[in-house]
Length: 342
Ligand code: CIR
Image (cartoon, rainbow, N blue to C red; front, side):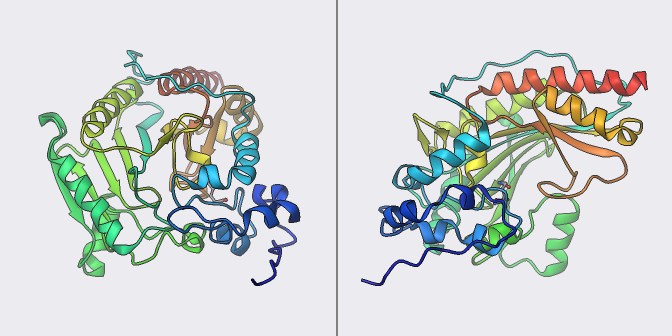
């Protein structure tokens, strides 16, 4: 047997995996494999190759969360700031009034959940054959959606670059993943077995085989976050009749990235804040007070552009989806009030 060599993270790295992976823990976990053959060395590739990783570790399958729990548990507790046991509760429909009926600030509202299919490796570790089976299973389930969510699935394979670019411009495709996903192995064989389902009105979408097997999205150009959430719940309910999702009692829905586990839900608005843009400290205080986060409108790790902020929930674990929507509603209402008062 080869001697174990403790991995060297970049000296500037502040990734949680670097903070929690001790030589003793590495020695304990490095020889282990999940039943699909996923290893700790594969899980930490992204953190090793990207010094600016915040987490630096991905799960290759559902079993990773138990086999490598001695490293994933502390990272999950630190990232999600949860203590003690975590309770998963079902979601209820919400009936909250639209936040900005005059469309003065909010450009759009969006809720997404990530899901992976039980019994398949997650995207950083899946084989080409299984990736294609995931695509087939999702394509079949989509056909059973209720009439108001019906639409069509478009696979990316075989598209020429100009067709792909056209779809990307119209937000009807997702690009190859970023360097974090790339180092984790998520981009292998892109764009094979990747694609997007979109309902006829484009308000309900499913990304297939991106960072997770499914990213289920409900969105519209309004501030009716409640209506957007209820549409997502309805679509998800129907899909759950045909698809079995990876779930464990301790952590809820299981995802490639440990930052998404639990509800695996991100609910947010794109909002124009011309005055608060110039009062970043106040905006940050408000966002933190309501447990929200700011991203650029291009997604994770992009910059804020032209005073348009993407404001969404920070908490995904140890909270139910309904509560996430209520918190977002209260927080964004307070932010709009502060903008008006400036
Ligand atoms: C990191 O460790 O910084 C990256 N793996 C991204 C973490 C945020 N999660 C995500 O985008 N799903």
